[in-house]
Length: 179
Image (cartoon, rainbow, N blue to C red; front, side):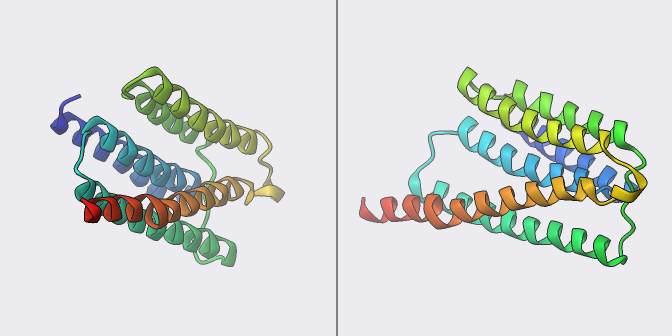
């Protein structure tokens, strides 16, 4: 896929999920948006390969730091919802699941090879499956159940971003310094 189309796709998916999440007060969509942004960064790194080590290291460093910031923001939104400062709205469960599934399908389709497609499909099947189960079990007394899925995605994003900063960016920057 050409670079301009890839940028439009990346921004479109993340912006759609984020806008719907903010409009509907749906933490699940905000978590899916952050996860999609991380996965799209990995796809764009693969699609534009080969990179020289320094540029790849700097990109990994900035993407990892932004991912950590997104994870902290997601946990802040969940905490605000638990404290009652941000009204959580899970009234659009079917539309939320449809948006996440559509974004997941696009992310699977744009992958470069079958291994990447399979890995992307596993990730999104697990995520969308968790979202579907929590929405199926949603009752008025379990209003915060979908936020557990969001917290799980936020935890994954935090660990993946930390690993990107701590190991991948560091190793790439060090390998370029040795050359």
